[in-house]
Length: 505
Image (cartoon, rainbow, N blue to C red; front, side, top):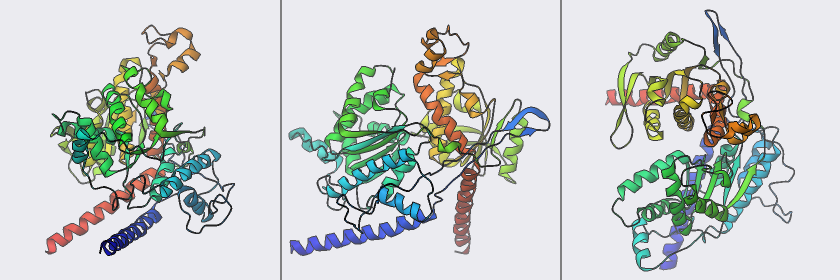
């Protein structure tokens, strides 16, 4: 009888997995896989200092591999072989990807190695949600009070790091899309992940070790955790991560992460960093660390002809005009957006999914990622007036602007803005300690008595600025804007269909 029940369970799992593969395959075929970009400068007739900055969208670049991904190690063909490297080769063969990058190929080999190990050790890693233990996070926490438990995964994760625009996110997503739908897996941006952690910690206040309970809930939901854009700038996050991941790794979590920084450079110069160092040691122990050595930023391969990023002074009236054009016949007025814990964010002007803010309202006030996520949930487009040149005097605002761009990019939102300079010019006075030392030895001290007045020496911001410049460039590309317009058009069409059915009913 038990054998019959087990057979039925296995058949059901297989059918669910097969249906999921068909579904995910259909969705992937709809995605635009090849993007090219461009940029130009446009001078307004009535304003000699006004121009449109236009740069590119992220490009998926690849080339034929030197090895046949359809062969196993012994050279014997295996038609059932799958994984990110195999999919990469397939897309090249069908013309979906063209001319490649050896650094990306090397990274794909690492991802393929991890994929193969996961397939071979799926049972040992408890990846399949239909056969894994059904214990809840609270149950695991309760049992651990009596019986110490530790079951680190037999498979090491992967920590990918490299410069901006080198394809880290694309490669991780390619890997993630090849994983079985029945596996306990999760792909999430690091900002989102930490917001979820803080939310769960509040929920479990009063428990002896709430981080252990939270870790149990996370690992019950997903054994394979893919974190995009791993970056630690907040002291609270830094103190949490060490204990949280000690529990997660003990629960068998396998981490795949992307970052602009090597593990040893994470939270460099941060407060109480000595308490964060054990996490770095654990990260290096539980993950294979791989650098994507490419120096190419594919987001800056140019091809677009127009954008929504306007450079110049005194462009308030112009931005209002553009805002009115976007909302059409809708009437704009003050609105509110829900953020976290019941708080609301006042929107000066909003209509038809578009919000208008002066820069000071969003980045010169005590706001964070949670506020920006709440904003992006309600509005698909943000009109931002007067982004300044960043330096020592407005470093905090620069940090908030970096976070805002990260959140908008992750949510595929559209940015309409006026600024005092191009993305590169906005951050020209933000430098790392290493950059400052090359400019002048005494500039590297964080003193206000810098050789260059207004120069801001900040390692975290100095690294983050490259990502922000790259993302602003992509968000202003023709391809990004066309994709955004198509998404909004499809959403409006679906809402219109639902409205018509409601009226008919």
